[in-house]
Each structure stands twice: as structure tokens, then as C-alpha cells.
Image (tube, rainbow, N blue to C red; front, side):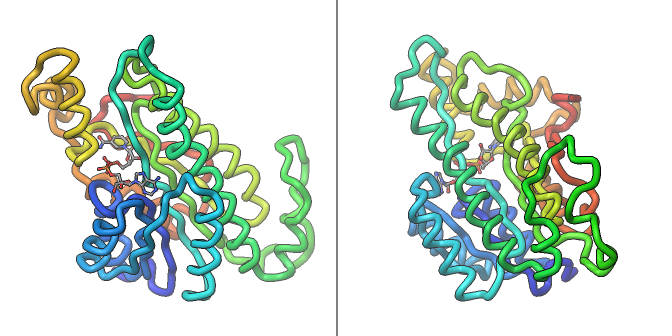
Length: 287
Ligand SMILES: NC(=O)c1ccc[n+]([C@@H]2O[C@H](COP(=O)([O-])OP(=O)(O)OC[C@H]3O[C@@H](n4cnc5c(N)ncnc54)[C@H](O)[C@@H]3O)[C@@H](O)[C@H]2O)c1
């Protein structure tokens, strides 16, 4: 399949786990993928495996994010897809969380994701046909009766979509987590950020959606298992097995399960879908 031929995609945190699965899927379907990853060695190794370009970056560093977007746009000419996958988690009781714990999780998962979305959206808008950019330049407002982008006789000559932004939320964004309060708050905020982004960028025909995975065995889950082991004395693998038992489909997700949903949102099949959050969780949550 070459659904993403000629598309340039940035996937953050793609040095391992779910992000690497997403990078592989997009690359197999023809995209030129940039692996924007904090761990430089992991970025190199994953890029070699995927056939992608490595870009070592800390997404919570806003200046570095702007440099990256400018360099990728200069090198490839355009950016068509952004997958906000980089994230950090920590398992610790709510009453023991420190400011440093809170800031680390929110700085990467929410602040970093927001400023990367903003920088890439600015680039996607620079790439638009001038007539659409001009028509769409008024601020988006949900009470606007007739969006500016839809005014004018040339409306139908524009493509259905000029960019896709997909962000990794979590089932932890759907319901509170007393042992992951900061993580769950960041993931709930990703759903809101996705909705605001979808509304702000709809006049430019740029789509924003979110995916909410359930349990995916990755290095993140190994850390969760270890942290739960320290808190509850459970053996490695026990916490994950207990969680899987609560999943209607009775298995964990694979990175490929999540990548399939992300690829759908990145594809033209999802041109008319924006502002949505899709659970990929074996039926664990149903809202
Ligand atoms: N594994 C799960 O069960 C699960 C469930 C729901 C949601 N998620 C979400 O999916 C995403 C990927 O999860 P995963 O399990 O593959 O995690 P992981 O910890 O295995 O991989 C995350 C990657 O992000 C990179 N990263 C971390 N901070 C970064 C930063 N500041 N800048 C750039 N890169 C950074 C890490 O180096 C790592 O390569 C995360 O957003 C996570 O919250 C995971």
C-alpha cells in the first residue's frame, strides 16, 4: 500500500514501543518518516530499522522544537503528518506527588505536545494554497455561522485535507487514576487539546484526532509493572496480567493495533473526521 506516498511524517518518541510501530506502519505505506526522539541512540537504531530519518530532540524544549520543524521543512519541503506519541508515565500515590513529578509528566505530555502542534500547524498553514490561507485566516470561533474558509466560489477547488495531526492520549485520559494522577490529567488534557486544535485548524482543512490505547506491552509498561511491584509487592508481569483480565477481548494491544488506528486517522479515509478520540483498548472503555 502507498497511502502515504509523497507525505512527510514526524513521529515523536518513535525510538521504541508504540511510536516505533507507528513509524514502521507509516513508512511501509510510503511516508518519509522523521523519528523525533529524546534518546539519540534509540532514534538512530529505530531510524535504521524503519528506513526513516532520526532527529534527536526533547519535545519539552520549545526552542528545539521550532528548530526541528524549520529544519525538517527545509530538508523535505513540507510536513504533512504529525504523530504526537512521545510521553512519560509514573506510578506514585496522588498524596506523594512532588512538584518535580508533576512538572516532568506535564512538560512532556502536554506542554511539549502543545507547542509542537502549534509549530507544525504554522508550517502546514505556510504550505497551503494562498487562496485558502487568505480565506481561512480569520480566527476560528465555534459560534461563527459561516466559516471564513467556506466562503467564496473557489471552495470546492481546495483539497479535502491539508494535514493530519494525531496525538496519543490513553484510556487513563477517560477516567481518574489515583496512582497516575498527573499522567491521567495530561492524557485527559490531550483529548481537550485535540478538540481545540481541530476547531482552530478546521478552516485550514487540517484534521486533529486522538487515539486512546489501553494496555500495550512496551518499555513504559515494564516501568509501570516495576513501580507497582515496589508499591504492592507484586511480581514482574503480575500487574499487567491483572489489567489484561479486565479487558473484554482478554489480550493486551500490540503496537500494530495502535498504529493501524493512527494510520487510519492519517489517511484520506479520515478526511471528514476531526476532533475525535478513539479507544484502542479491546473494549475496556466504551465512552
Ligand atoms: N504502553 C501503554 O500501555 C500505553 C497506553 C496508553 C497510552 N500510551 C501512550 O502511548 C505513547 C507511547 O507509549 P509507549 O508505551 O510506547 O512508551 P515508551 O516509554 O515505551 O516510549 C516512549 C518514547 O518516547 C520518548 N520520549 C520520552 N520523552 C521524550 C521527550 N521529551 N522528547 C522526545 N521523546 C521523548 C522515549 O525516549 C521513548 O522512546 C505515550 O504517549 C503513552 O503515554 C501508552
